[in-house]
Length: 216
Image (cartoon, rainbow, N blue to C red):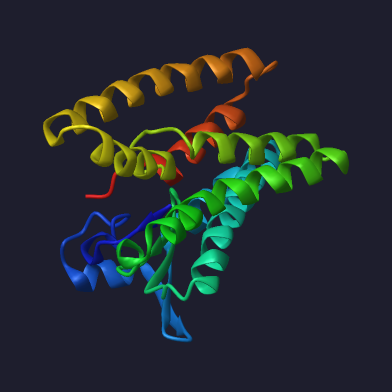
């Protein structure tokens, strides 16, 4: 997920007091990019490690990391600077104010790069016999294309809707698309999850929240 508003960078934190926010963060800078680790990120990792050996959980975390790295690679190629990279309980967030100013073609490529990275890696993992990791990467790539919340699919659909529909109809289009895609996603999980477990369901919630959680 990529955010472009500076006030959303600490969206994972529920405190308004900056001093209290900093207590929950480990922060450092690498080449003008601020890297932040929220303590909720380590809490989620510990939870996944304690449940079913962490197979699903760590595969989900790695899938999210691969997704964001794919975004980041294209941003570097297109010279779009990254202000902040935040690791938090619901995933990983890249913050950039410059993404909106990029040419439309480059912006779309950057937005699609995350899912493309997951889908390509899913194919590689499947051939290598790593079925669980392959399926989680497949889910991550496909779910992120859904027009829900802050998914890249929602950003792309809104760009398309603004160009094709009247301003007063854009939200209606987004809501309808979000409802139907959400129903599809739930049915998809129920059909293909042969033996649902607490860890699997938690992992799927993690995948949804890591990309779809609306920043406040």
